[in-house]
Image (cartoon, rainbow, N blue to C red):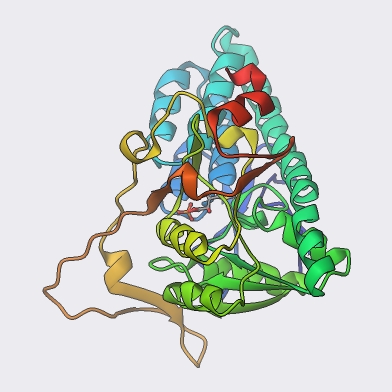
Length: 359
Ligand code: MRU
């Protein structure tokens, strides 16, 4: 996707063909700043500190982190895989990418590991970009059908599941980009997504850069707009989908699903194959939910009128703050899943029919 007319992916190899470049997403949208990663420890820090975030991108950067580690010391495969796996607990794409690297590397002699790890990381990145493009194609008919009936489409999305959260295109945003490019009159309600504001900071930035009409709303406004017929469809991304179709995603997704259910608004979840965790059945009890610092709740970061990036406290001193980063939407609230292979219901039979090799 493009920033100021220049096409980028969200992770790529530098000109030297070994170091790894990312955008520092903690600085967006105020500063478009690249970071060059030269060690696996820097890759781990980038994931932990959320310089990169979004389930598929976390997986791709972790895969490149393994490649950097194999260049540093090919004997460190197991501890590096373990350390990278601990950077963020909820998105299963991280473990998926590390498992792929383990399978590719563990039987290789040390001298062959670095080249193989880079090749595998590139494969994971290319696969994610193509997978997301197909998710866009498979979600597009949902928007076309609404546009054919109503003349326009109002989509609500939560958090950021665009190209910044994947390697390219995004998951939830891919059908929106394709609808826009196909000339549909599409408008997006962008949940701000407190506490870290991925909607306000990243989704709005992406949509704006692509010329897609959008309006940023407070997280609590979605139900109101649904009651008033202003939301035709909700599309969100996900960090893990269970065998039974339960969906983990950014905190607040569950409340949007409840409001959508109450108002008869279709609630769709877009996911690549790497987000499916067939080992887990019940999302609420089995998916680990990342608990992040309360400072993300008590503080907010923004740009001052004179261009400085500042963090200010918005809660009086002395109050405790809790910060679960994700929640689980039960499958019964999910209208359907948009995958690279097509659309299906959020249940075990449909997922097994879509991904028989994962049985
Ligand atoms: O904490 P984040 O910003 O990594 O959370 C991201 C999300 O919740 C996304 O919706 C999810 O990873 C899907 S990204 C295609």
